[in-house]
Image (cartoon, rainbow, N blue to C red; front, side):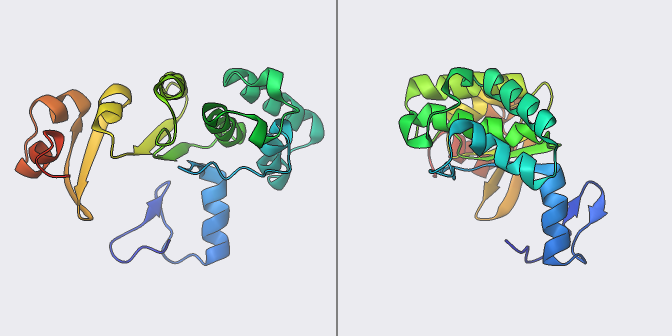
Length: 191
């Protein structure tokens, strides 16, 4: 989406002057997206769903094969390479989305409610994977789940009606918020 005000910088570069194509190229090179809805290609098997962005980026076949296999192994789906997305559970589909995203080695991974459609067991598996990925990637998660934010984040930014209210270390936000709006949201008085 287009931003409406302020400055939009990516990797220290003001991108407001770039055209759509230039912004898309820059995003594709730097940012990985994991959406609330899986956005998998239903006609392609697990291997090919991870391979698509690598083909788009121009990787050679041998490098694509290596990356796909490594990423599927990392998310625990190496044995499901020839399955279609519809043959996977919700948690497996979300892990497939994560594999597809990390295959291109983005600098930042943006996750939009990555566990909202998952059961507690699948959620725990995804959260464990997020912890592992945080060693190699900058990860930003957008969530309404305060419990999940407390479990997986190092820092929390609280927004209220589009305005940034507070940013701090996770423990501090949840034990000693500095703003009443943050405290009210965390304690369930607003939400």
